Length: 168
Image 1 (cartoon, rainbow, N blue to C red):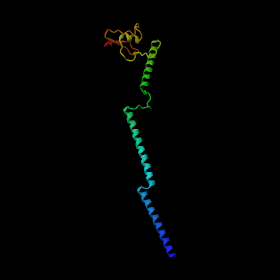
Image 2: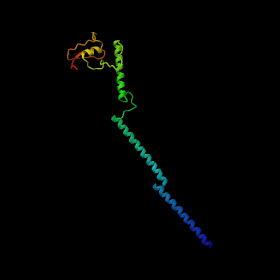
Image 3: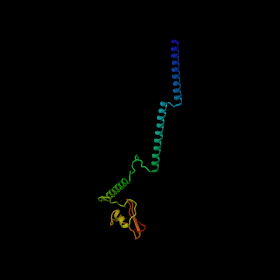
Image 4: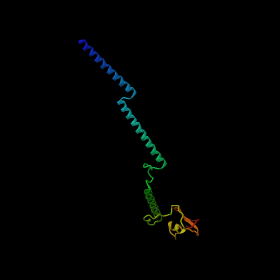
């Protein structure tokens, strides 16, 4: 009976060792092929990181294309109006500055509100309007002589001159 018990123990240890060896062999195979659960998790994490990187690169490329096409405004560029309202406010403010400068040159009080002068803007006016804009009707320096059908023009610091043109 002692021999049978000893044979049973030996057989049990052999099966146990064979199982442990088979298990180790399976783990080695999984690790080499990348199909183990741990390796699978690592592989998925790397794949997700690569996907996020590709998404971010595509997003950056799309934003660059929109900026280049003018569909988006570059908020980092100074000096450009951010929207239509800001552009209009800038235009009105600039017009007021021109009025103040013109009034200072003439020695008269500046225009108020949103009155804009055409003098100095290169806009052609009828002779009477040009005379008023550059210093008054009676001023010899600013008097423009224009026949019917002609327009008087003047740039800042220049005398008004008559040019052929259509009456509005």
